[in-house]
Length: 178
Image: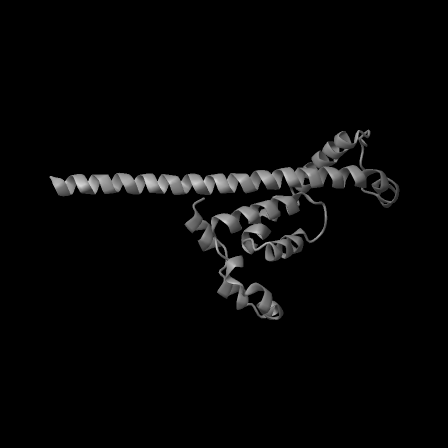
């Protein structure tokens, strides 16, 4: 998706500030750098959004917005990337991070999960450590990969634009000399 298409789909700072329920946050979200798309803010947003997507907790978007604010990353992009872990992808994603965490910690993974109150009371005590450790490490790895990928893709795109401009300039100069 092109950057201009992404800018059209994400609400502007003015549209967000016009929402009455967010009036109490005007001082926080009125900072223009939190809404601009540039190489640094987009890369930081990728890092934050992908990291928060991997953490098994409620209100991941709030954490992403909070981190984006304090690290001056693009807030809408940070929040949007959190939705990689949505209700459909969460079970396999968190099961994979649990297995990864169990492997990293050298513990034997639990093979069966039951969604009963009895299992949640007893089984969750066994599962939480590998789940959160695996999720944190996976979040760091995925976030770092996203950060580097955005920086690389942005730089590649700029270089391609420079090359197209140089070719267009050469073509114009040849036409003018003829």
